[in-house]
Image 1 (cartoon, rainbow, N blue to C red):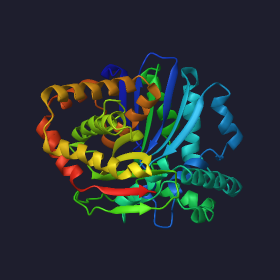
Image 2 (image 1 turned 90 degrees about the vertical axis):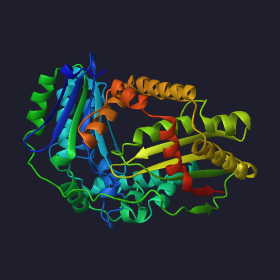
Image 3 (image 1 turned 180 degrees about the vertical axis):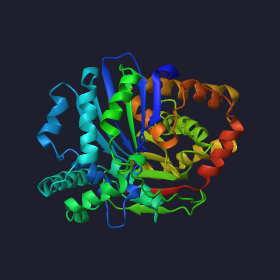
Image 4 (image 1 turned 180 degrees about the horizontal axis):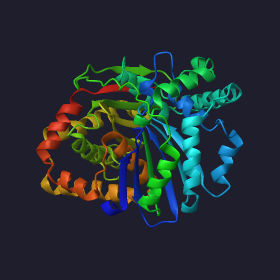
Length: 410
């Protein structure tokens, strides 16, 4: 999909970066990737990054919330946002003739939102409902609780949704203070993908974003925790019909050279394919679970690897034993060359197919440029995969799988 002649990546005079990739399509995907998330909150700002994301749609210096909601929807477009531990994304999907309209709107809500107190009071109730919904879904809640356990005493351990009691205390000045400190041009990347020429995108970006005052925020404090942290084993009585289990540990950060090896290993072990080792063992061969999956998330300076499943209570111990058996196999036994080549092709195919979803592709492209100033092509990924050996994967397995923590909901 990538053609260097159809891509532009530059920095404005105020420090804000932008990337555009041309693809022949009547639809465009565009937005702001902001290098600000839950880990950037102060101790007394629980849930503030996510709170801001909600309130960006509630009015600016020149537009009411009703205009923001209808501006693109009335033309068939969509406006959306999400928050992670490290980023906030505000983005739109529109027809290409509405590109300038969407850019103007997104620029307005990111840089000129006013966070009125009457809207804050209403939106807090929405977020509280979101918190309560999570509490009613153990398969989702366990991910947050596990990260809080693994990243204890670290900003990465903070819950994205925040604390209900603290949320009810926030006012306009709190939101404005957080945005002033964090939404600075040096932390923001504008991205777009669609059938618009790079020259036109550059002109419009300069028009709507070039006059934003230049401000530089304090750099994020980088973490440097060893992978061999103390494991924990925690059981929480939730009075559930099934037991929910998560095993995992800290892992490699985004710039670690072993990140792709762990991604490949994660895909082999518990990726989306029915042929993953955990699915074959726990579901296909033994019928113990409906779903089992592993996940690897890399942050800028740290990461987390985890395995999740739910089973009947009487099958919990056996399921955990089978999970650990598969991990030990990967630690002790090198993969055959035939299996390894098949696994590489499988991962590469999943990436290629995933890139066909252009919204997901645009968001992934934006994150890559936000984090590292570039985006690997499929061919570059193929070349990096080609040099990964069975011994490399075995080394990673021993480094990551040797000291797993457990969180169990009973």
